[in-house]
Amino acid sequence: MAPPPGDQPPRPSVDGVDLDDLIWLRSGYTPTGMYIEAAALSGGVVLRHSHDPDGTALTFTRQTWAALLNSAEDFRALI
Image 1 (tube, rainbow, N blue to C red):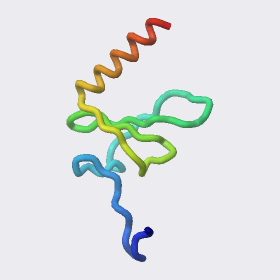
Image 2 (cartoon, one colour; image 1 turned 45 degrees about the vertical axis):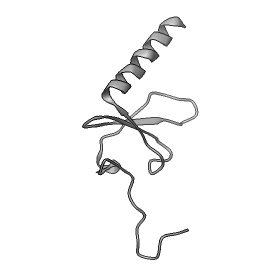
Image 3 (cartoon, one colour; image 1 turned 90 degrees about the vertical axis):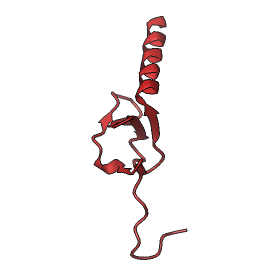
Image 4 (cartoon, one colour; image 1 turned 135 degrees about the horizontal axis):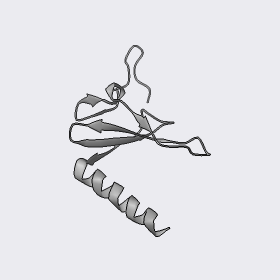
């Protein structure tokens, strides 16, 4: 259902922070042109898809984000 004329859809936000106000970093090269973007929040990190910036955003605490990065580094060492 479309919003009534003159009404704007709500802006994506996390903990009251408008996602458009964050500084987004884009992931490295991909042949498909599909990227993940990451931005820092006061309590962690938020991720979104570059082709759908108003869509779903995933949030991670600092501890969870660090564990994810460490796991990725451990996996990379195996290949």
